[in-house]
Image (tube, rainbow, N blue to C red):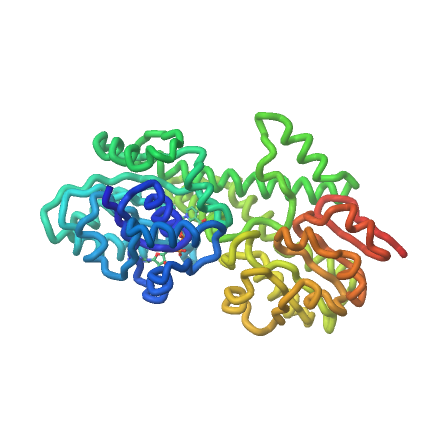
Length: 438
Ligand SMILES: NC(=O)c1ccc[n+]([C@@H]2O[C@H](COP(=O)([O-])OP(=O)(O)OC[C@H]3O[C@@H](n4cnc5c(N)ncnc54)[C@H](O)[C@@H]3O)[C@@H](O)[C@H]2O)c1
């Protein structure tokens, strides 16, 4: 099938590459010239495991093309997938300006009857609004069938999540379009759920808000565990073994971040209120998460006192492992809070340092290794659970610190390696501390 994908971010690019891999003829369009130039060299502008290999293979095979020209990309396509960003506005609602521009770009160039698929995460009613916008601006008399097809991939495993998704949601009022989208995805062999447009729109927000709430729930349980001397890891295991609850998303830590959960929870809250549903549960989800983001700083103050002049090492900057994405990463607030308190911060992340420096700036130092960040530090924060940190030579790293104090915001260090240290104070989240006095 001839497919155009508008927006080559994490979602658009992963989708375009995977659709090419299963044999479609895909053109990816983006307004960002630099991105398109990088892509035209067969390179990925983002860090995403497995993406570049698939990208260059399909690019070389001629199934995948990249352009900044909407005309070139759209005019031949029978299916047009919209994957532009829907970031958060100041008041919490989803900012639809990229989507509105995309509708106008489409309207200028659609030259044949087509199916338009909205993959971007959008509030309920947006597909309808987009369809109207498109109709108002269409230059040629063509028939458009709208499909809501929300995306569930996770950064860091985007390719696997696309190729082996749990389900594909197809929300449309057009039977013919539903069949065509099923045909497009059929080689993936993933179960379909057919529904109407509005239900598809709600499914996406409901899923993300539920997962975010699950995280905040276990984090509040972790805070209780710390207060009473219980171990949240055992509690989570005991809960998760119950099939009705499940193990996923029960990892206590310093809260969620990233380009989706924070903005999607806020957008759902905003649109619920607009429809007269207060949804106060989501307010608590957000409040607990905000609290968790400051947890390590509070613990450090409690243990070290005034942080002025103290050196804090931060391991991990990206909002999660296996990505270089810094959007809403807890490390940002943490770095800001620490430097405002006068601490000196040295941070290390295996891939996100460049993106981090664009957001956090030069108020912190960027080390080239964990050991460099940790040297002479008064305390070390583990912010992102990169595998590399779990494989560190912990005794050597701890020895290089001024004080062997570790606050593990992701509970990712193995007890064995902690106990192998000559001297250490290890403070996880929701679990008893481990102190080796030496
Ligand atoms: N990132 C994720 O993990 C994820 C997962 C599921 C759903 N989503 C949703 O998917 C959507 C896209 O997210 P993302 O993370 O890929 O965003 P992104 O910001 O990484 O990418 C969006 C891209 O769209 C391009 N763009 C903007 N306007 C355009 C236009 N008119 N024509 C062509 N290109 C245009 C931008 O230049 C950018 O490259 C959002 O709605 C997001 O909520 C994201």
